[in-house]
Length: 250
Image 1 (tube, rainbow, N blue to C red):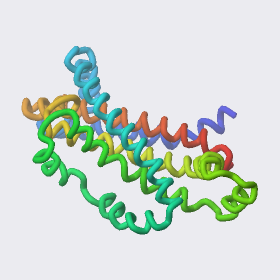
Image 2: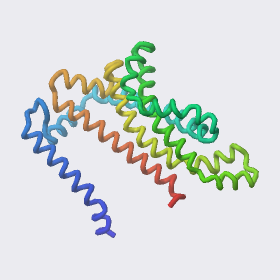
Image 3: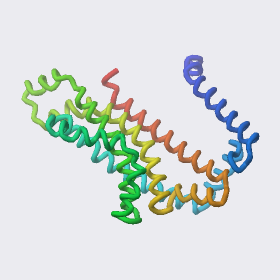
Image 4: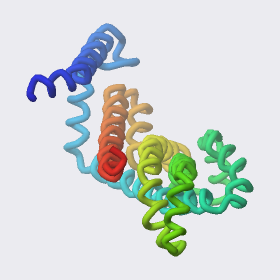
């Protein structure tokens, strides 16, 4: 059992160690104005974590991310299932969904700024727009992939529309929706930083901007590393949740 576990996880750890070693070598071989070693980045990250300012900025970003992301889930999953259930509605809105899904949302930030100004609400809107379409699109595709036989069996047992959604559509669609959720996590983090860059400097975005303006390369890399670690942790959590709800498919 132990040998099997080691063999299964060995490629991951070897790849991680190799990446860290490459970062360390490249950082020591390059000017500190462009790149710092991994060890120096960890030292800077530890120094940042110990400051009260960092905790306040992390809390600001966490509130922004959570608000926009939860709204994206609350809209994307129900609307996706509705579009899959109502064909006329899906056909009418599908071109717009595809266009917006492919649109670089950063380009919409000046437009949002001109309408809504600075503040928390427009930043939440940016995070929402970054995150909602992966959830919506994957939910639609998951609900559309339900076998018609399942719907017919449910109807033959005189299931109500609500029972059909609860007993058939939701369990079958949830694993697909969770794939969209994991994709949305990364996009929401990008949206969070973009909003903090362009709308008002707060949170981790402000941390990166301040470090860049002060030519603090270590601070920039430490902030980026932290955001990457948060993203990986959230996506791993999403994967665990997806595996939990997809056990019936195994």
